[in-house]
Image: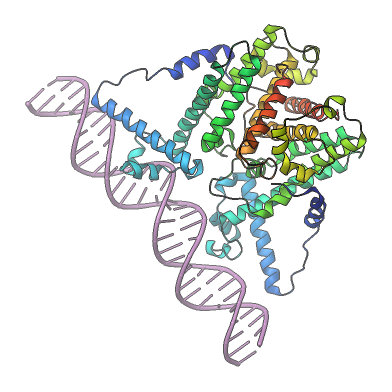
Length: 255
Length: 255
DNA sequence: CAACATTCGAGAGCACTGCTCTTGCATTTC
DNA sequence: GAAATGCAAGAGCAGTGCTCTCGAATGTTG
């Protein structure tokens, strides 16, 4: 689910770059265009009806072509979903990156808050896409390797804050002196591979808990588990989420 | 999503009670039995193939009856899913209640830990049922009111700990002196309705963050988002989860 | 006990899905 | 220009949820 942090920068450049090769022949041009159209219509259907209702036949109908013709461009429904998943990860990643880039580099809490808010805003604006990537996986489906790099973008942003927080030397004593159990330290080995050796076990641990907390809070709200828990009046959900952000920031020592 | 805490006890008694009325006539007997069989087979299919693949026709086939006959007992696929959702909530609730009941009443951290561990264990043992209740909701589906009471059981357990922690008077100063923003306090009004007036805003807030954290941690693990983040060797995931429990407990002041 | 009413099971059928295969046509390449 | 390739369309298979009708079994009532 994660790609080494050092490689993430490369990914970001690659994905934000426009189409790498302009198609030469007319056939290739048409192919690229129709593929794009199929993905656009699929994205539209996904946004309005959700992933379970996404139908290749309906897409073909919308495009005025036979259902069998779509299979020239998309291998299967699963493959289409995979493309939409990658697209969603990138869209979310770009939103988070753009929000974080707007904050002052030295303002760690500002960067942290920007990321969290961007993730929540994106999720609310794209509920079905969020459910596609962070909701219950479809039982048979296995995420292909192409999805892990786009899926690491938000994690990479959060991680960089932990690195910067460590480098700043302003971490509170309760964190720098905190120790995690040897077993947990061992369990964190894959994440350490991603983060690098600059960040302490304790901070990695707190950062991951904050990350899963962010994910839990957004999912809880989006999946309707907050009904009769948090008010739904204007600004109420936002006020609550602000509190969450503050708590997570405190937890990783940047508040 | 929540039922007033005071009513939860009633619910618990109701749901654990065996079938309230033994059917008299042969027809009613047969009807109850066949309904039971349908639900059993559905539960089995749910466990093995997941909710999206749950098919009324397949259930009918397994039971050796025509697919149309199933509709005499189950109004629709949605209604069947609703029954399974309620069943799952109750199963999870019972597991959590049983685990919590095994702990000493005065051992708040023990009760807290028992609940968290029970929730995770149940989720791992019943991934598809967990996904059914806490995963992405199906777009068209709206949860009927019958689901909210069973869905409140775990929350009720956690809430009782907060009540007991407040009553014990052993809460750390950083919590008793903590204040939440007026906006957030306002947003917490529905949850306060559930919790009662004994628990402070600050503790309610921390408790809810812990709750969403628990949900996020379990979902993250179950939905495969922890690949390459936490090791998958024996005991690694458990060690990590222990750390989460400790952190949440610290957060609500019972560590 | 007979007549009526209700319930039930089964089959056919509709509209939909993912996906495959063949057939004819257009385009590209040699 | 001929051969190879790419493409669109249609038919078809197996599956889905759900509805309707039609006999048969089981209730209840006169």
